[in-house]
Amino acid sequence: MMNNRERLDKSAKSKGLYKFFQDNAFLTSGNVQLKSNYSKGKESPWSLAFAGHSIKDVFKIDDPTFCSKFVQAISGDGQEANKITTLHSSSLASLLVFYSVSNDNPIYMRVNDKEEKFIESRFEVRNEVSPGSGNYSNIDVVLLGENCIMYLESKFSEYLGSKPVEVKKVDYYNKIYERLSGILKEAGVHLVEKESKRFLESIEDKSFYNEGLKQMISHYLGVTTELMKGDDQFSGKKVVLGEILFKFGDRVPKASDKYQSYKNAYGILQKGLARCAEEDDTGLIINNLTTYQCVLGSKLNHKYLMNLPESIRQFYRFDEII
Image (cartoon, rainbow, N blue to C red; front, side):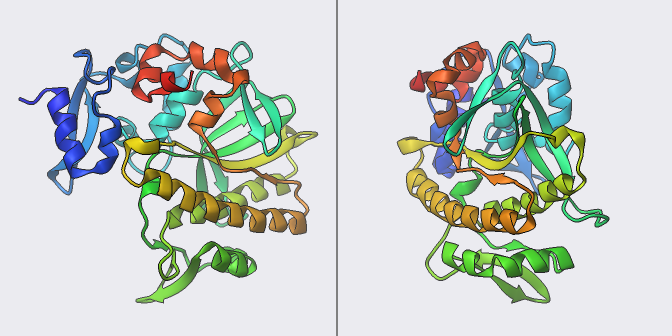
């Protein structure tokens, strides 16, 4: 039977992403069990998951609120309960980083050019993309503060890939994509018809994470629907929609180029969504793209970072930004 180091080395040979996890002190300490994931009934040559214990036990988390936050995080569509144990899960990253946000342990997030304080976190929050549609967007994290509410989509490694993503042919998507058609073209994507279906895909030689742009558009519709209800929870508060990525640097081949490509496209979409928010008169702020390293590397968040269990800091190599 292979040990963790051998498993990680084998996975890294099959998938460059897993070079990030090689020689990871937390994973190779002997206190963590890893197993291969399965795809279509076969053992994956590269995707690994935690085995044998709950996430709470794996990371030795003693915060009594963690269990309720974990239940929230696996409540979305799909197989989140299984996916969240995968090493490269974006839901796992957002849960482990944001579960402990509280009055006694606040986190600060930059809302474009100003730091805002947040004292509560919620996970996998559903927003209906159009009233009565029955179609929901699930956003990874919602951070709540006295003056601000932030809807935050989390990405770990998804942005390293690129492929067309289907966009449903329904009225509310038709309208928003028509409004954003020029912006999307500027960003390097367009809608194409294939076998009676419609896809958002990259134009010519531009290649980046198309699904990230689609999800931000869906989240825009979802948050706008919530704002239009006029709920008291929004009264007198800034409402922000943004996205946070994990930055791998030189540890993962081509990751820096992929990050920059997606950042450029996101920045263009951000302008378009901000224009839509102004036209829709919702007051919704579309935030700059940020990274986990940028947030946790902020001086304002030094205490928050140090309050994270050492296991989490080691696993994501956050100790390198202290």
